[in-house]
Image (cartoon, rainbow, N blue to C red; front, side):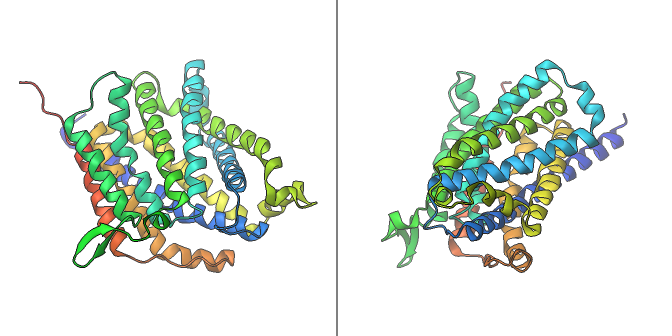
Amino acid sequence: MSESAQLVSHRRAVLALVVVNVLWGSSFPFMKALNLLADEHFGVDEHTASGAFRAAASAWMIGLRFTLAFAMFAICCQGVMRRVRWSHFLAGIAIGCLFVVGMVLQVSGLSTIPASRSGFLTSLAVVWTPILATLFEKQRPRPIVLIAAGVSLFGVAILTGLLQWYDGGLSFARDGLGQWKTGDTLTLLAVLFFSGQIVAVDWFGKRLDSLAFTPSMFGTTAVSALLFFALIQPSIPEITASDAASSGWYALTIQPRFYVLIVLLSIFPSLVAFSLMNRFQPSVSPTQASVLYTLEPLMASTWAMFIPGLLSVWCSVQYANETLTFELILGGTILILANLLALWPAKKAE
């Protein structure tokens, strides 16, 4: 391949990964809208919904989303399906188990925090992944990575309102505990599982055809989420109190405004985004790919500035467009800085 052809290939790979981040960013307001639809259907809100309800609703949405994604992958990528071997199948199961736990935690957290805030908190996976990777490899994290972790905590404190601007300077909020939401805790826990997923993808991807373990990852995510839903559904106070418990989820799912959102999520942020990622990420270095992935929270915030208003009309729910705030701008900027610090290249020995 000529140098010019390689340059075009690299540019195409970078553009493809930018598209991946655009698609991933769109999933945050869409999942937020699905949470609002579930709340409306069962007559709860962010203050009255039980933890069991949040977990079950998240698992139900994720199960449907990735069942459709798996079916579409099997239809559209039959050549890849024929390349799947036992090793690919097991790798996808391992990655899917980490991914589904992170997704359930993240979607549950979205019920109490804005989509833009969730996007920035999720971006911390870029900071914590190098730490987890070095521990997995039994090596000490580089000092710059530890500094990035500390900077990220500072950014989280501002983004969540624990630190606020008073009298010309930053200080702890007078109602610090009230500023921290359950969604913040759930999202930060999700980041740990997403970091584990990234490490697993890197480890298996160096040894196997990464696109070939995508279908078992989708399948594991769908089956695990639906099994978890089946286990937890009988213990939901909001549902067991109703005589129509078994038909409540079915009645929600067949609503056009609900299943259209699920289909959109299955096609674009799931099937298309993961296929592009697995296809084009090998054409750039891991560091370049990680830096590109820091675009996700910016894309999530951009979508959240105008998509909620459109979704509120389509879904007939109260979901206002988000606005730029001091906490979002400053906290988000610091988190992006922490991500870039964590990805700072190590010095090579002469």
